[in-house]
Amino acid sequence: MNHQAWSYENALKFAREKLSHASTDQAAHHEAKLEAELLLCHVLHCQRATLYTWPERELTPQQAEQFFEFVERRQNGEPLAYITEQREFWGLNLKVSPATLIPRADTETLVEAALEKIHDLPCAKVLDLGSGSGAIILAITSERADGEFHAVDLSAAALAIAQHNAQHLGLNVHFFQGSWFEPVHANQYDLIVSNPPYIEDLDPHLQQGDLRFEPPTALSSGRDGLDDLRLIIHQAWLHLHHQAWLVVEHGYNQAEAVAALFKQQGYQAIELRRDLSGQARVTMGQKP
Ligand SMILES: C[S@@+](CC[C@H](N)C(=O)[O-])C[C@H]1O[C@@H](n2cnc3c(N)ncnc32)[C@H](O)[C@@H]1O
Image (cartoon, rainbow, N blue to C red; front, side, top):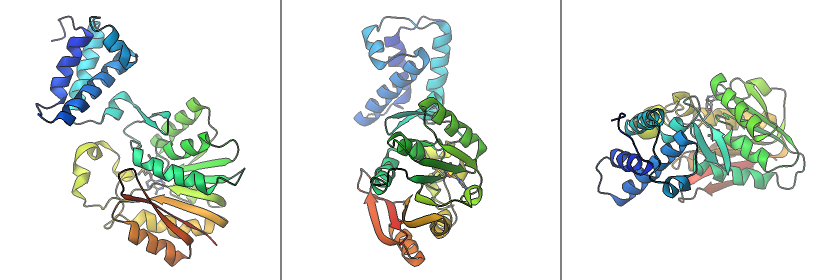
């Protein structure tokens, strides 16, 4: 296959057919077309428009080989973001790796809520627990002129990616390795945010789709998925200033249980936010 000359147009057509899995579904075709384009752009380091401006241009043998390898990986279910090693979040281009969760668009709901809570505080001190690629803390930092921004993750490999992202974006965040509050035990904050693991250990979705490729330590959290949320909601109390906020992401079916944990701890003004598809996604509360 790689011995023949491949024009952009033919390479795209070939990849589209491979990636649509012979589906007759229009949405699957559309998705396959987009993914084929993104993979080819990744190989060629070009914009999508280039592919259609010069459809007759040919790939070098090395480019063709790399492109077909990427298509095969995608065909085997590997998430596009891990193949291209990047993902856009809050308008920021972030590097991701198999050590980091792939940031989800739904998590922008948490960023929005968090920014609202510190809107009137010019120099807020903010902590992101379980920062992964750094998506949340970098999005928040990118919107703020001043402040002190801290992030913790257990995974050294994830932290290295987050640090790379911060440097690349020119954003000033202090990263700490350790378990939840352990590396920042002496600190108090105006805002603590977290998108912790919250999937039930035995949830069959863990064996499906993109989740199969993501780090298990980023995903599951005990029998009911709430082990980490319980700990964070409880311990954040000791690390929040008066009037400060805790904002957490959780599963669509965990809102009631999470609100109960907030209430039990003594938080006030407990509020729920829904994501773009209307699912309960973020709960927040204030330390009186
Ligand atoms: C669901 S991911 C969220 C990643 C990122 N904040 C985002 O929204 O894309 C959860 C993160 O928590 C980290 N994590 C898991 N257990 C942890 C612990 N005990 N202490 C600190 N971080 C932990 C994982 O390494 C992972 O990066």
